[in-house]
Amino acid sequence: MKKDIHPEVHEVNAQCTCGYSFTTSSTKPELKATICSHCHPFFTGDQKFVDTAGRIEKFESRYKKTEKKSKK
Image (cartoon, rainbow, N blue to C red; front, side, top):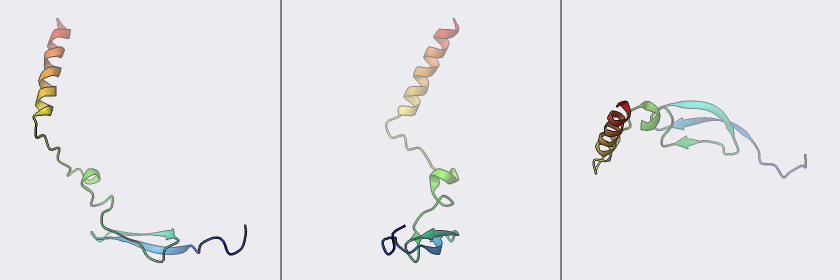
């Protein structure tokens, strides 16, 4: 490796605003995140699907109709 061209790598404690923290390596001396996999709604299962136009009901009604036709 060439000397003096690579950044210095630090062992840092990355912290989220929810309080979760873990140790990793980075070229920055400290890491702070606003959201992580422990508090993000997609990963925690708290995510809600917003159905403003009734699209889910329309799809389910169409699927039920085609399912009944295929059984005959």
